[in-house]
Image 1 (cartoon, one colour):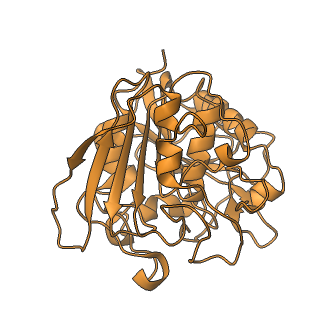
Image 2 (image 1 turned 120 degrees about the vertical axis):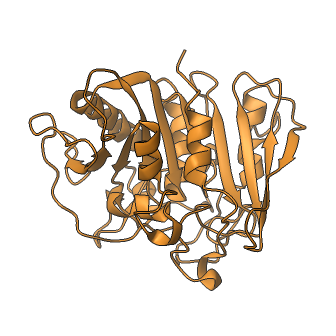
Image 3 (image 1 turned 135 degrees about the vertical axis):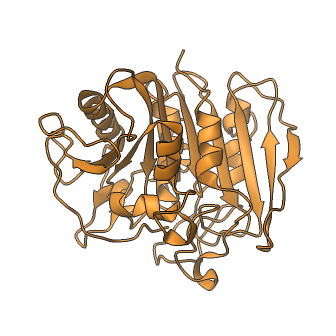
Length: 329
């Protein structure tokens, strides 16, 4: 659920002080105090050609400084599994924004859930307009770097994954595709999810996740916060009465199932469900036996707290391989 806490330099006006390619830069979002973002341009960036952008949102209690480390094998930011490392190899811009901070400095996203009996993060309880924040963020990124507006993507972990689902409901006009990890569509439990278009979505989730239970319901994890979480399969599949992404997109609800290679003796395996006949691609990767972790990333807390980690594949690479071919119409 968390990103690692760390030093948090103040953001600067990155239009006036442009980021150095190949290095992290911390930039301000005008009119959004204390909601800076980290941007990393590939080392070969020269501004001559527009590049795709991946916006990666941290988990509840995390921050922009910790998000990349969650995606790194062993938390080692020199690992090739890191999202920033994949961005460097593949030539896209990666952005790590900050959620809304509570009085103790713990950050969260308003992924929705403000209904009776539902889990509602601090940002949700405060009614923070995170969709407006993300719009402002995207506008600022476009001022800072030469980006391809048809190839902007959203991913996130846990609460940030839930926020990715909300953006798919409410901001499909700005994002070409979505790839939440460890989070389901909390927003749709208490609001109408009526996207402006059918947008591609890939979800990755551990079957034994105690922090965001795969079947939904109360968590048994890090937080003492009460309330039910959205179920993963209901969010991704659904039916006419309670739509998920496959039913919203007009898919055949019986998917094609592919077992992914069991490349590591880590105690878990993964299967990918791909739905056919859809207005836009819908994929669900279920990691059987894994917990609240980013596959190929960091076992950031003990297995007894958050469940285990899959090393059979790197979610950073799988997320990008899905996103890279999607474009806004």
